Image (tube, rainbow, N blue to C red):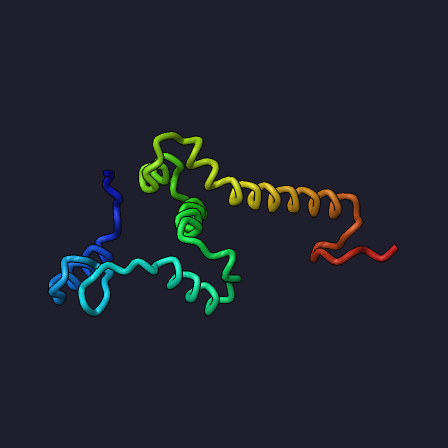
Length: 130
């Protein structure tokens, strides 16, 4: 078992839910039984959000959370701790798509700079007249 840090706001909201419920579970049916259809529920939500059903699985949300943390500037050791990964290699694998996007953006800037320097595009990015 591991501890996962959550925000104070989420903690407060979960405690309120628990206070107002007769059931010890956070997510439960009306009769207080566990919900076993979380994947199906996530797929329906994903479809409403425009995500293809076959691309929606529970672990994907974990990966998305990991990438969003990296985008917000959270350092890799902190992400590793929040994700509960034993080694940095696992965390780095989750963050690989983000790193590829960042590298692509940097490469595009370098290419744009080279084109401007060589007079192939104007200062606003428009191609120079031949």
